[in-house]
Image 1 (cartoon, rainbow, N blue to C red):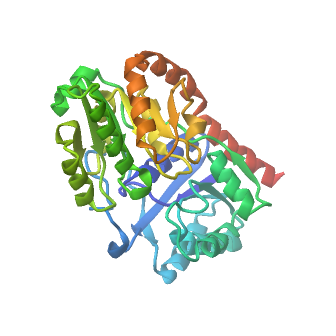
Image 2: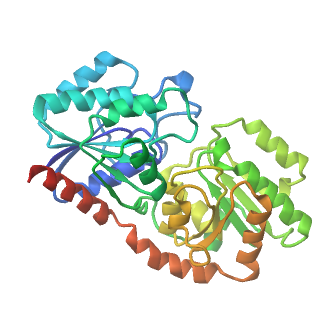
Image 3: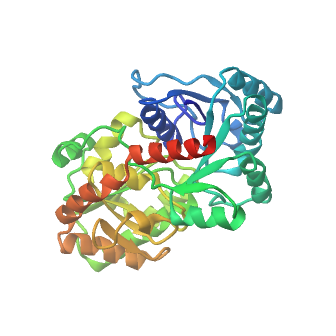
Length: 380
């Protein structure tokens, strides 16, 4: 097949760009694959981060053509014409928020009309975590052009069938991110980061309200008040703030948690991700809401167990008592209990071995096979 992946891609940054790069790499083993990305992904006014482009060394990654302007309808028609000239058999869109629905839907509709390409949406979400008026209508516009879908959790499957009950789809778990290098010795990683604490837990990823870092800070206060591990434990909170950074730092100050929490408030380049995960004993996802999280797939790549809240599809990937612990959302005491159990019961080695086994089901080959099977069925 001739396949064109449309969406975020290097030199743009973030988890979706990483996903699309890995997907293109695995599909290209048997298919002709191109990737097209944005020249303007978000208007600067709407983008909460510091930069939309990847940083660090990426000489091995070929930049995708930057053609798409997400807010210019005239551009969508010209991009559709350019894509049609390549005569693709399949268009793949990674879908995560309705903001892109007019752009994606228009490009898909025009290319289908011109060359009869099939359209696949791989859905991170159907409805976004932070909902806005018009989300359903916008999503319907884009999804009306889709021939089939891939969802990656029970929660997204449920939303798809609720709003689009006649969809042709497959549920395939989010594959493990394998583009961040390999695990390095824990002592080496901590030396690089200047960490002398005996116990290190990691929060990783963009900091937004729904991701619950405030709850994890409260959990750290409970651990401190219990007088257990107080002098030994450190929370590494690593990620760029998409929320008001000052209120997090003020909370840490008000709770006298300065020695126990270290913020790294920047986007982490690919080549530095391994250091943070290698330094940690366990990764904590204190989300208030979610459908899924690629952070678990990064943690599993580095053989790290996860403490996660029971929201969306997180409990489908984190097996309670086997690859980590699953706790109720918005419950600092439950998170503190899980962290305490992890250390007092000495579960790190056991969980890590289980992660090594469990992560085998999260393969890119499985995703590629599902794409091929649906495309084949549409031709039969």
